[in-house]
Image (tube, rainbow, N blue to C red; front, side):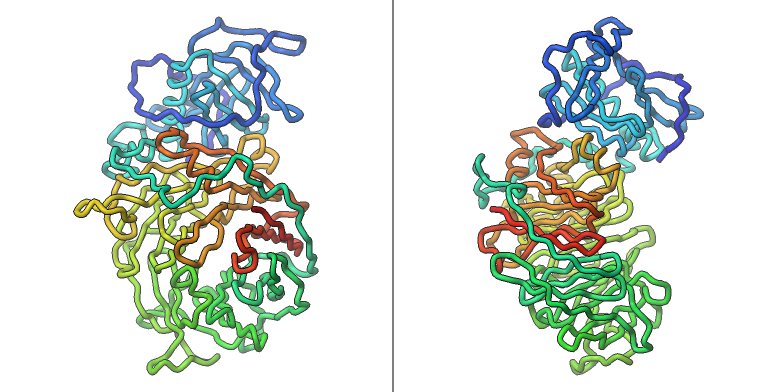
Length: 572
């Protein structure tokens, strides 16, 4: 990335340059209505250039609405780099100039010939082009400039193939393969009058203590709030409510020193919780807390062939594994995918002083994979997200080689989730949620399958991007999106209905059925910005869902803030 920004303009690219572009233009519903017939009024800057087909009207978002800023302006994308080999592209439109990056939160709308964007330090703007060719030319230029600023190389076909992989350049640009499948045969589209989450009030429980780091929802009796060196216990109630159990479990190791975990993992029919800590001297260990005895009972060393393997993430073998009696779970570090076993030879459970976990299965990959997060399907297939943005799909049969691998779009994957049936993947980046449909037809049998089961390559549909409107990104003060996830489903045949992510003081909710319908190949919509948001007074540590066992056909959202407030709200 090229953060350098110098307000000296040279080597400008003309919008009518003969250079060829191959980007698919994207549509979207407007963030907020623009005035239909802008007119020069007091306070509005007069047009500085003739009405060009490559130009448009510039608006600024103020007090909840867009107002005309300049009636006619031609945007220019300019290189402020030291030379042509070190590009640092900026967008200059009217009196607004800023470096091009994902931080601009640009949202495009081909139908309305419009782009909305956040100019860091200046505000939120919209530009409505006078002509569709002008809009198309701008979007092609902008995408090339974003590619070059992100990857530090020229946007040639050779460079794109090197970055994205053979055959994936068009896929990364948003072009669906001719053989791409969009399977919604088992899904009933939402009715227009379907209720949204924000129509419901929520209940609040406040717990004093250290900052909250994680919330683990149970499908049985309890749910848990991880904060500092303690875990607060809540009772799951019919209807989706949570009740304070007035139990706080202090986390101490066998030497009496406190443990401060960042992640917990329920297992063994939710009678125990595995804890992962990033602290020095603890990263190569996993702690097991007995939730019935309310204490840490085991301290596992993560080793292979006598070498410590510090874990960066842990997860269950499959979607419903925490509700079952299991001794195995999955672990991840920068270049390893591991299945650990908590039993010794003969199946005897290890005690607190036992040295290491059993290395059940796994694979050491080449340096540079930079694994960061993972999730499992209902049948145990694994999706892994990486620092470089790549997503790899592994079958439940082997962890040695990914069945399918997708290139990164330029941003690290910080969290990943997958539906129970494995047909959809949700990858969280700082500025958007990347939605992938894994369905593809088997090249030999033509039967419908997923990228977990066969090598799909670029035949899988191009990624759909779930984004914040720029004005909402500004309200959230540029906070990153975090921990995107689907509704929690643990039974075959059930469908996830919602997507949620946290962003600063906001929980962002997408109706998953509407997303799938609106972004189908026929709709030609690759960016989606229709959502509900819930604001809280403190930073949100976790936005998650109550298990359907307690809610029936309803969906209940749980929000935990860093200050210890827990909210539970429901929706249809």
